[in-house]
Amino acid sequence: MSQLDYLILGQGLAGSLLADRLWQAGQKVALIDQGHKQASSQLAAGIINPIAGRWFTKSWQMERLLPIAFAYYRQLEQRLGCPLLEEKEVAMLFRFPEVANNWMARSTDPNLQPFVSPNFDQSAYERSFGALAGGVEFSPAGRLNLPLLIARYRAYWQGQGQLLLEEAFDFEALELLENGLAYKSLRAKAIIFCEGAKVQQNPYFNALPFCPAKGEVLFVEIPDYPFDDKMVKDGVFIIPLGNKTYWVGSSYEHEYDSLAPTQAERYRLLGQLEQLLEGHSFKVLDHRAAARPTQRKRRPILGAHPKYSQLYILNGLGAKGSYLTPYCSAQLAAHLLEQEPLDKEFDIAYYQDFF
Image (cartoon, rainbow, N blue to C red; front, side):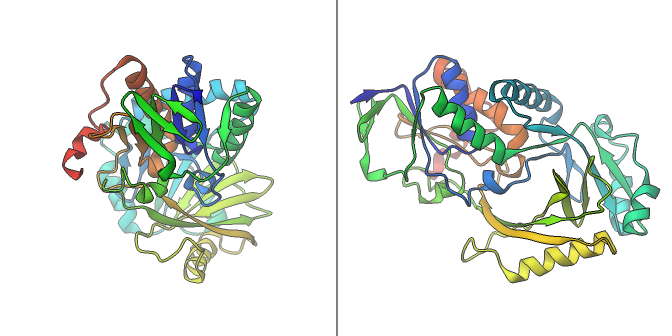
C-alpha cells in the first residue's frame, strides 16, 4: 500500500494550487480527477476585477490579495513555460442614467479610488457601441487563462512523476483510520476535497450551505472588435481570448434542472451582445454551461471536518476564485503543515452548527 501525505480530490484551480503548495513544501501528494468538462474552472473567464456589481463593491481584501495572486501566477508561468495571466483594464459602460448615478454616488469612496483608471475615454466606446450615459475603467485587473493553467499543470504534475488518478472518486472505498485514511491502494494523513459544485454529492460536506449557480456563456468570433486590450462590460462581459475570439457571459441561475445549455439563455445573451455591438458582425462558435460552487456568505470555506480530522475542504471560491485561490491555498497549506490558524472569514468552524 503506497504511503502519501495528502490526497486531493479535484484538479481545478483550487486543487492544482493546493497540490502545488504542498508538493513544493516537500509533501507526497496524489491528485484524483476524472477531467470533468463541465467544471466551472474549465468554463470561467478567469476575470480578476477589483470593483464588481451594479453597486460597485470592492472585492474583499483586493488591495492585499491581488499582489499575492499576480506574484504567484507569474512564478507559475515560469515553471509551466506559458503565459497564464493577462493584465487588462475592466471597462464598465453605463447604458442607462440609473447606473451612472450609482457610480457617481460611489466614486468618491476613498477605498475605490486606487482602482479607478484615469484612461477612460467615453467617446472611443461610443464610436463603436453607440451613445452611453457614462462609464469607468478599473485597474489593476486581469484575466487568468484557467483552462490553459489546468491543462498545463496536469501535464507538469505527471511530467514530474507525481501521481494523478484519472477516475471518479468512490466514497465507498474511503476508509477512515485512527491515524489517517486509506483509499484503495493508497494511504495518507488526510484528504482535501476541492471538487467545486460536486460538493453537494459529498456525504461528509453536503450539509454546508452551498448553493451552486449555473452559468451559461457564448464563445464568439468578432472580426472587427476594437477593444482587445480591455475587458468590457455592458450588460454582458466581452473578454478577449485571442485570434478575434471572445468569451461572452454570463448568467447566474440557482434553480436549474440540468447543466445543459438552454435556448432561452442563448437568446438572452445574444440579445445583450447585439445591443452592445450595434452593427458589428459576429459568429457564435460555442454555447456552454457549468455550475459555480457558491455559498450564501460569499466566502470560500476551508478547514477540517468538525468530526473527522482526516477530512478537509477547500471550496466555494466562486467567481472570485482567480484572485482568492493563491491566498486560500497558501492558508490551508500553512494550516496543514504548520498548524497556522485559518483566516476567520474562511474557517469552516463558522459552520459548526451545520454538522
